[in-house]
Image 1 (cartoon, rainbow, N blue to C red):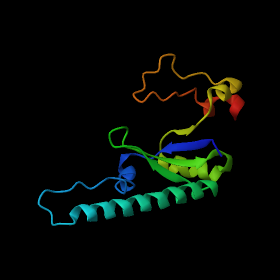
Image 2 (image 1 turned 180 degrees about the horizontal axis):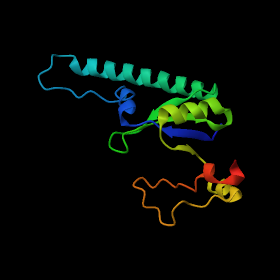
Image 3 (image 1 turned 30 degrees about the horizontal axis):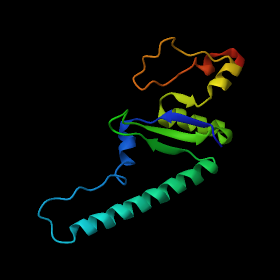
Image 4 (image 1 turned 30 degrees about the vertical axis):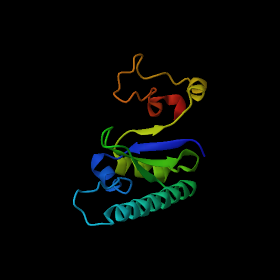
Length: 143
């Protein structure tokens, strides 16, 4: 399962999924043992994050969508992600209805060449360098 479909969710929803992986900073003058408590809290947060990652992988294997949030210093958004090989019309409709953004499919350059999918722009000026191809839903040969 190495091909994913993603749909943009938006910054607001993405915020809900942040926080567990952020380290708490110590404050001067805290009581003795505060550093140990912070280490314990960080360990608990990392364990919870590991469990969340394992659950996300299991959900993908079972054909469910997950939300992947990027950093607030990047695009500050989340993406609905599912395994392409398990995607159904209902999943795609869910992404279109609730994600309300572009629905994208990851493809290797070789697969794009096999399908005759040209780059959308000759010179990519997109801030994050995303290599979009022509839209396949607008191509008759793709349905």
